[in-house]
Image 1 (spheres, helix red, strand yellow):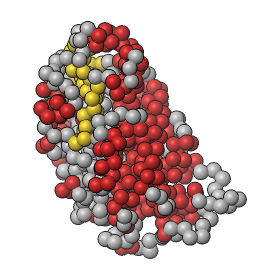
Image 2 (cartoon, helix red, strand yellow):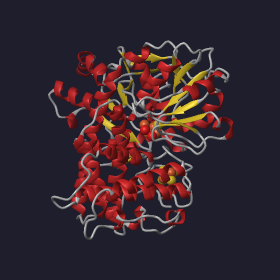
Image 3 (tube, helix red, strand yellow):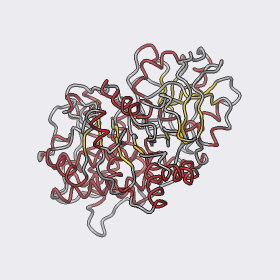
Image 4 (cartoon, helix red, strand yellow):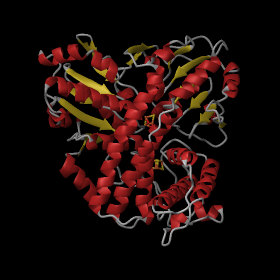
Length: 538
Ligand code: FS2
Ligand code: SF4
């Protein structure tokens, strides 16, 4: 195996003998095989000669490609048997297209045995791309496509689709086997940022089905009933579960990225949605044992569970873990959560983690409703700077940097955040500036879209360019959705983004050089030095 798609990759080079995330060599090889054949589907779809007899309606195939690619994103699916099924289905979809003369191996490759997949050098993983720059640029693109598929699938289940986004996913996948110059590949990566902005906007509008978020205080205590903990990003799963648990004597709690649900009016109507339990994905092993009840993973991040709560893990959607109960979607889009509800009834109520309450819901609608006040505070010098600290949390000690950075910010600085990175500083009691919370949490990582809208609207109101605002970016990344969000920011012309705790391992020296030269991308260093670099004065 060779995987370097996340920030915790071994030695910041690549995982080669089992993943730091817990992904096995065999599962990693299966994921490579799925990715390889998905690129084969894309190649055959895009390169058919005029008049070729191609499948008439590909909507089921499109949904499949999005789901399968999403399943290969970090911490989504650890279950080899699910990838075996994805692989077989991918081959069937690919083979529904006519062959093309001179097509790449991915268009005809069929493994004859498991051993054909679990091999170290089968020419199907990313290391088979020999040129380091080509590999680096295609890796960046592929990671962005994975993030795109994750967000697109959430929008799609809520009825929002966009063929232009799907077409770009095929275009990107097919490019693996095409001849492109460095410049052309770099342009494709930038295009993924542009399309990424479209997918974020699509999901933002899809999530409005549950009402526009309001700035909300979220209870982090516990009730007396047994509970179900819902983690991940899929609001529709949470909604369906809440409907099915009504009047059953079972409470529901959010975890991690699901915190934002409390800020949507539709979710506020459920009295048995008690509150948020615990912090970010990175602390699952410490926090989940005391929840006592079952845990539903609607998306990443899943940390391979220890025996203490292994039997209480349920997965749905693209998520999978060997031997965990998987709740499938029915043809009408509904899901039957009766097994997890029955499990909860047999469990003890959760034990209070005594974390203190949280504030969330500062999406673009909620913040822009406060725009006159915010602008007045900026003009009166009460707010001197905004710093976007969106992104991911992670397990490594060096992430304490983000807590220290938040603590060290002068009191006239507002943090704009989204994603699970916020759990590094959203309980610090950083206070407010004349009623405006100093940590404005827009919600999930996809709600970074809100932060961009807020910045654009503030710039407009002040009659300046976004680049002229007292606004800096100090982003924490972990997985491929954060890569997509990063590229979205670049595509929108945001310069001098600081990123950490490590730079993506897939960046070749030439690609890194391009990011530094053209966009001023910079790695984070120490808190005092970075404050200076970002122009934040004390
Ligand atoms: Fe956090 Fe994990 Fe949101 Fe990422 S819960 S790192 O995959 O998607 O941010
Ligand atoms: Fe390693 Fe990250 Fe890949 Fe897991 S997802 S195998 S930790 S690089």
